[in-house]
Image (cartoon, rainbow, N blue to C red; front, top):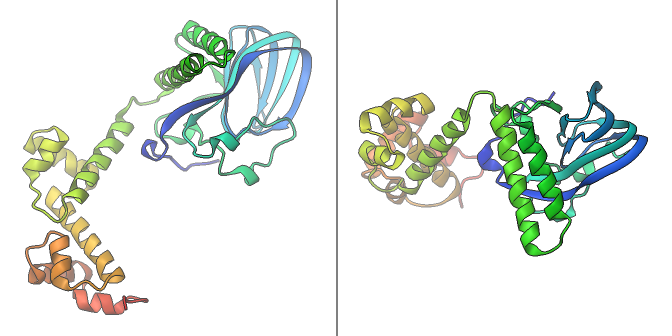
Length: 296
């Protein structure tokens, strides 16, 4: 079982529909395969038996299902089946034009690992079952039918409308199956925002007041939530980042200590050396000399 959690900031959301149509077939079986993308489907007529990762799911008219990338599954249809469906990416991949809809028998995705989409269930606070029970099924049904209609045309306006609807589909899925609201995403945004702000101003003067203003909080409230997210006061974390940057410069450049002190926001070389030795147990010079491959 994959327990790795993805960060929303590492995977830009940009839906891309690969296939979108109304599947019609009578009594059939499709063998094992794994997908590089997502398969979202609605059972309009007939009866499906999906076997996903060894678990069977019966789909009857009115049911929805989502097969996520990498899941091993088979499909068996009974009677006359009509199944509106779409194959699509939810996340941007620069190589997505190379990706494709796999066919029965394709179970080894290792040669195409760079094309495989991350699963939604690998993101914080999301847990989407295979057989979906939306709170507003009519919204999903209408959306899928509209996607199919727009996708059936090749002009740019219809293509853009279809991709816009794919984004709405993702929003509906997240809205219905997010387990604890958007707190985790807000946490990530705060952490990313503060790291970027501090890194950008590392060589200058940064006050708690300026950080709080950038984050949109009062100074007192900012101190509380900053410590909650980072486990340190703003000043402690700022010194940590400055020393981290300084150690990188010591290991990879031949810059003099006074320049490193200036670049990293220390008052002078003496102040820098004192803070560095307190944190690393070595003076900056000894730290540089101790590196396996010192700058030359």
